[in-house]
Image 1: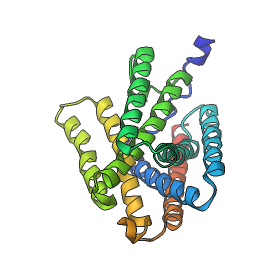
Image 2: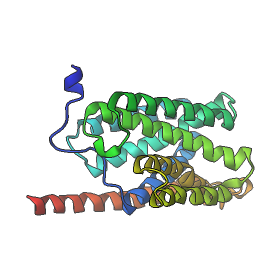
Image 3: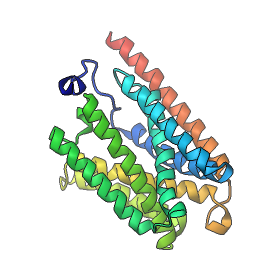
Amino acid sequence: MIRRWAAHRPEGRKVPEIGILFWTIKVLTTAMGEVTSDYLVRTFNPVIVVPLAGLGLVAALVLQFAAHRYVPWTYWLAVVMVAIFGTMAADVLHIELGIPYIISTALFAIVLAVIFGAWYASERTLSIHSIDTHRRELFYWAAVLATFALGTATGDMTASTLGLGYFDSGILFAMLFTLPALAYGLGSVDAILAFWVAYILTRPLGASFADWVGRSRSLSGLGLGTGSVSLGLTIVIVILVGYLTVAGRHQRREAA
């Protein structure tokens, strides 16, 4: 059973190549997940919406695990659902349970460290270029979910607890986001560490700017509305993922 669970797929990896388009869509999904979550829980009953988002995440992950190779729309659908549900999970701890953002940030950081520790102990690598077994894919998505929850709590902590507001928080995380690339370019850190640090930072980066645009002026935002911002970001993401899908099919035809 274990050997079958961890068996390598001859079709290849289940994650996309890392490049400008990857990071662009990743930041857009973090922003979209933030405002979509806010819109849903403020428009509908959270008791209904949060479980439905959880079911949507499970369904998206089932599609992703069932695929035999990287498929853009299934992969990014899973990321979007992680973004929405991860935001809700972080917000529930603070809004419903009254846990301070600094505590939830520390809690999610510990959870992520445990996932990374278990992943490395099992597979001896945290490289996303080795996501070619079911077990590694399970570790990968567990880490992704934890990074979204951690990033959400961190962004809310800087904006609210530290009083920076959404725009200044976005600027802060934009500057921090460049540091892993610079450190990797200078040879100070390896590619795996640089990737995961940058990956974690994309969450508060995208979410802070999305909140700034969507939240009301009384909350230091521009007041465009979370629903409108969510719709706009969704359209852009669909266009970019559609482009990746068409480009991927063209590449496979050329390789055939």
